[in-house]
Length: 298
Image (cartoon, rainbow, N blue to C red; front, side, top):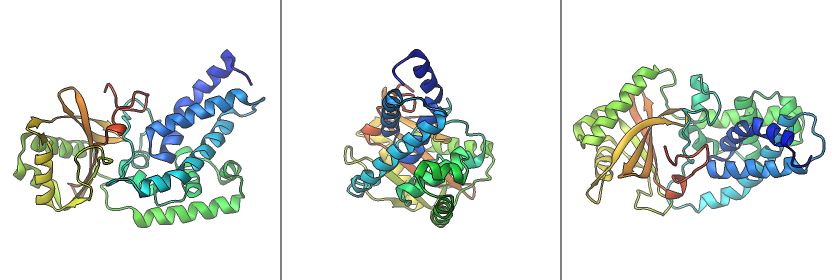
């Protein structure tokens, strides 16, 4: 196809959508950007393409499947809890998130659950659920039959349904915001009773430090244990951590800074009107991204 102005413009029309596809597949914004760049290079080496999006989506999906195969081994040896790379979504980095289901499908909790699927199952599920592909279209992408696509999709949905925990999918967004803001105020003030009031009895915290920073390597559970851990963590070496609210992966999350340095991203999850889980990304490698999907400069 060659590097022409028209070819570049055509690719740019699909860049954001490609990033959204690759991120949902990989759970890593940095790797998703790499896939987009690889697809860009292949795009310019291709001959005439009748359907640009279909062609690019197939290329990106296959690149992601290959990456996921090697990523499994890396994540098995990961130090502590592995969590997806957070993405600020208020600006549309992952496409429209207008419904509760669309938001849930890019949530950190759901991306963690997607790790239970093998790479091809994950591709089928993402193409069907996030991009509304028919089974015929999915089959073309994964070089299989429609019948096999249906079978893979059914198996993936069953495994995900079994693995998904509680969530307030129907909780009013205003109520969810109030709950997270109450959590924010109590955490910022070191208010243990206030924190315990908004936390569920069996609340769990997962922290992804990647072995790079001092962070809990195992999940912490229980209202009093979690409250004490949060208060202690927000006073790192006597330095107060400043929290600010923003949309992360389709949900209200918190950015934690010491001075101007971003040191963590906290994403609370709710159930039965309480905070039932908190996923904390503190691995510096997941906090210093500069591309459109990252957190740098936010």
